Length: 145
Image (cartoon, rainbow, N blue to C red; front, side):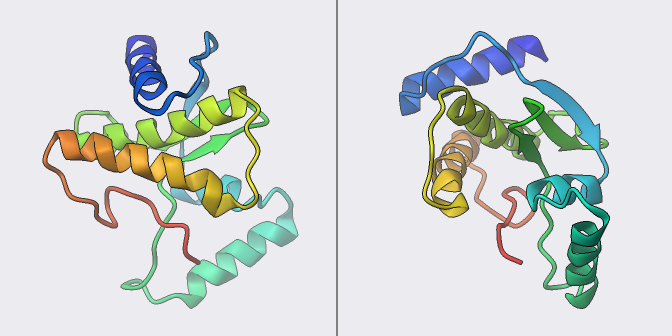
């Protein structure tokens, strides 16, 4: 994993002029709901119940799940249990979250979450483009509720 993280950091720092960091984030595997809780900042029982109610209210066909997340406080990337990194789509999740790691390490600030996500989605899309893979709801997570 460390070699993979180093390769991604090097690529991101060259392509997007993000400052490379010597400190790699921790990488943990988690249940999808725990990834969603982190993504939406649901750290209390009340806020977690809000996220659960929102997911339950959406039809399964319209539901767009958060598939990975970066925890700035813990300097940790959360990937779904079962992630292997064997496909371009799975690796693109790691690329996306490494952008957030480098943004946080550089102390970059953004006006809104969507502004912070813009570069991460761009890098993820470029990564998928190397493999001729198109963006899809299964390869790129959605910010929509």
